[in-house]
Image (cartoon, rainbow, N blue to C red; front, side):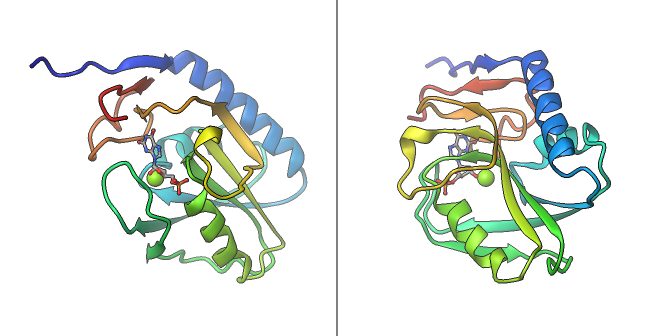
Length: 176
Ligand code: XMP
Ligand code: MG
């Protein structure tokens, strides 16, 4: 059987334009403030690297890594922090950066955990959003693109740790 080829959903040029727009919007919203940008490893690192380079407000960065119980492409709903932040959130303007919101379970739980650390503000910027897959209500403050219920890879997103390096966002149809 031939290996399935990923089909492009968003080209690198379309991604660049949208990420620059998001960075502009975030810069306007946080004018005069300093941001702490919190990336969720591994998927968000490519998006976050481009996003922060479009900002014109000062920012610090930190990362958190989460393990969700369950496997493959299905989120189980339990979220455990396997690598915590090294920065105190107290009094800071915090922006969580995630690759994709799917069921909403990961972000709704992470936001709950990080809110207890008393940031001055806490918002979420997701590169992609699959709204029709929500199992809990969750709305990101900034979204790059809304997408239908297809499994996507590239620009940091993986299938079994493959494809993260692709510069375009592609659909892998055999996954779902
Ligand atoms: P929630 O908790 O919102 O989890 O269901 C979001 C996480 O699910 C993964 N995910 C994907 N990863 N392509 C991917 O590479 C996809 O289409 C996809 N949909 C969900 C991803 O790890 C995200 O952080
Ligand atoms: Mg992820």
